[in-house]
Image 1 (cartoon, rainbow, N blue to C red):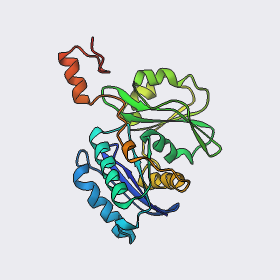
Image 2: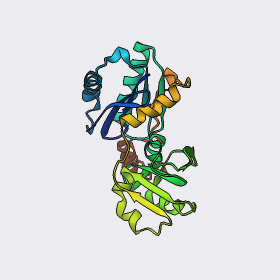
Image 3: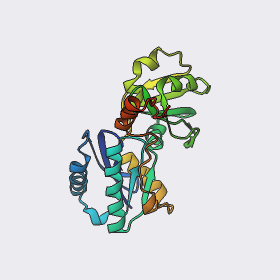
Image 4: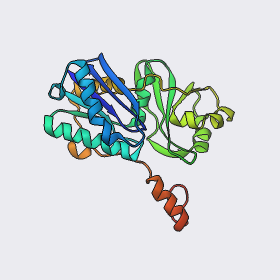
Length: 243
């Protein structure tokens, strides 16, 4: 089963290809806001270099957010087109769950805390427990102030791994906080399109298929430009609540 993985939820576009669980290739490139120009050519290049073409794909795995508003729209609309044109199954997954899955095989009996920078000292985050090859969700995806995350982390006694772009951006705040049994990781170990493709293979082989109408972004908060406008003109707070 040939599975394509597509992650456009950040400014680093990552695509990967697996044959069952076998690694075939992966491309990671920082695109900023150029996903619409580069995504399809990158997919074509990955397939060509691996000896396949688009008609050979048996399924697609894609991140649905949270993350970059523009990147998510481009990635999901591309996958909608693949699903409709090729009549193949799709696995759409929370970006945070995919991040946790990507590093879960490195650890056991820990709490994994993926973070994505959401600007203005906010992060997208969720908590997952990894134990004996099982990844279980503890909290739902949410957008929170980094200070709120710091306050909540110590409620859990297990060892904790904090990682992702939020951990990178707010490393000093996290480092200076009184965090118990917590380790900060400031690289993107394991996170890439290949691991996303493998995750998709695991679900697709057992019949998972996201409906076409469910291939929509999961934003969690309003666009930053809208929040800035409301804060300036409507006396809104950083969460977009109007007073």
